[in-house]
Image (cartoon, rainbow, N blue to C red; front, top):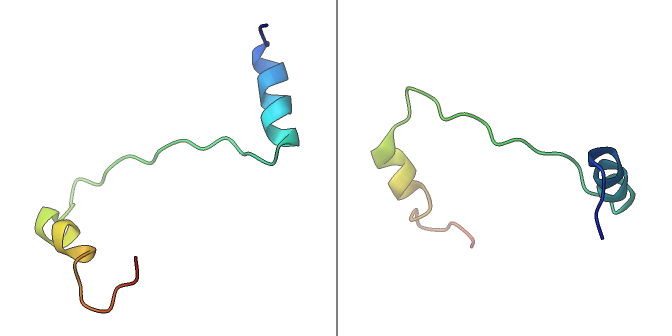
Amino acid sequence: MSYTLRGTSYLLHWLGWSPQVPQRRTGERDEEATATWGKRPGRAR
């Protein structure tokens, strides 16, 4: 079975999915803050 690009797009839309493109990383990213972000007390996981 094979789908065209348009057919795949239509099928995903019908299933409730949306096209998502990952965002670029910022040049000013703070790696230390990013590493400790999920480790803060009281943060629900």
